[in-house]
Length: 427
Ligand code: AMP
Ligand code: GLY
Figure 1 (cartoon, rainbow, N blue to C red):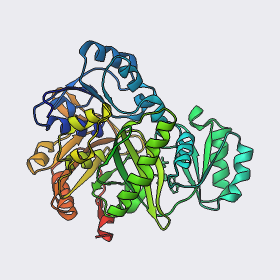
Figure 2: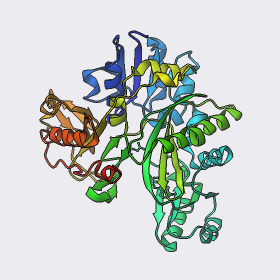
Figure 3: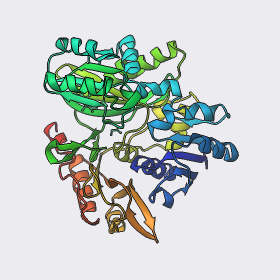
Figure 4: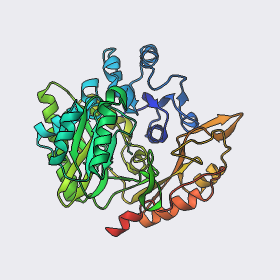
């Protein structure tokens, strides 16, 4: 048992609030810092006025303050090598090194590793010139998927229904400079049918512990209509991810990937987020991310029975005991409340009320885009907050989350009313 660690969490979203919140519930009591954090983390940690991508400032703070562990939330600092910089100072980090983070930072690298490791995934080819990419389209049928290689804030994937759309996407990325260097290479990929699920694999380079699968809801409106967002809600466990599916993820996806990376001298420590398509062809990996998902973290971490810090530290130190990762029975649901206009333009500074009442009703409110203005809680982002509830089953968790959300108000707030509805088809 570990007591009272000093822990630095990097990031400022609902995901980071959920990480800080779960760390704050560990036995013993840690001293928590969050850079930069938000109005939610401020209640549990000391927020530091340091941006998540300001690597020199983070390293300077860590050198001066020597945290026992740093937990990195978002992908950008991981892909930029924050872990490498902190480890060079003899500090422990939960989050992969720069080379390992390329599993998210480069879809071409990720695909190449998956193929070498024998991981089930969509067939794809990589191109740097548009003429060759367009010539290859015939081999893929329709719809076809066109992906920018690098980080594109979730916008680099085009599902083309027609050949003309596919050609336009290829021209945009390779000739038009859309997504800049992130689009200097493109993947043409086979379209997969099925239902998506997210699985977080805690890794220490060699060993793995899977957390229960979750499902995100990416479209802004009910019935998966309207434009894509950063995620409008999530639930766990996802019944589509049966025990058989989870065993495939462990033995055919995560373990072979870690082995293939080790062969290349790369040790993957942190969470390997497996974005899966589960369909008629079985389990296929759509993408790897090198960090926890948002909003999936806001349901998965509240479902963790074990203390979180000892698990994350064990991953960082290469001595994870998967049997130490225990999960609570029951289910969890989170519903995101968004600002008017999101995912398009939205106003900021709208006063928020009712979060205490939602918590009094048994929910947990995780802040994403909030701020304190003259002591009042106001909106400061598109996804403003998310309301999580646990229950003995999914139905109870859904009802509790929506009962909680009914207390919260801000002008023009909108949220989906069908989070987890899809799951009941499988139950
Ligand atoms: P990615 O960033 O690679 O996960 O892609 C973003 C989203 O595009 C995924 O969550 C899927 O909804 C969709 N997508 C990506 N690749 C494929 C594929 N090969 N077939 C069908 N849908 C896909
Ligand atoms: N919820 C999907 C992501 O975090 O990328």
